[in-house]
Image 1 (cartoon, rainbow, N blue to C red):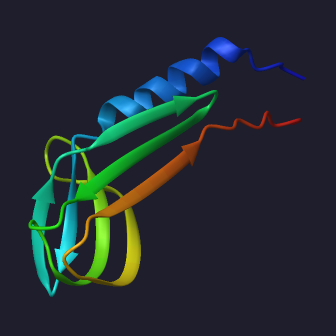
Image 2: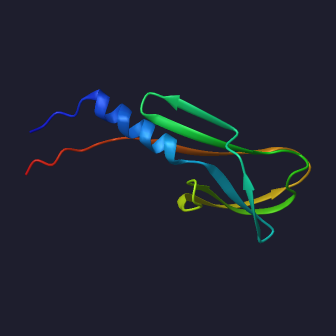
Length: 103
């Protein structure tokens, strides 16, 4: 059985991190583009944060998606949040794990 080395996991984590360009957020049925506010890498976990300030968006937040540089959705999070005049932080957390087949 093969033993996966940490370096492979680091490469996969960094590759995942590098593909996320920005976010699309559905507010009251209108999709708007938002930048990635912050990225946190902790071990094999990558967390991407999207921040909607008190002015940018108000209303029903229906979904958020992380997209690549050509606009392809990489991850989508269905939401049902009524956003008023305070900020909102949306987080996408990924953890890289690899299982080796025994066959």
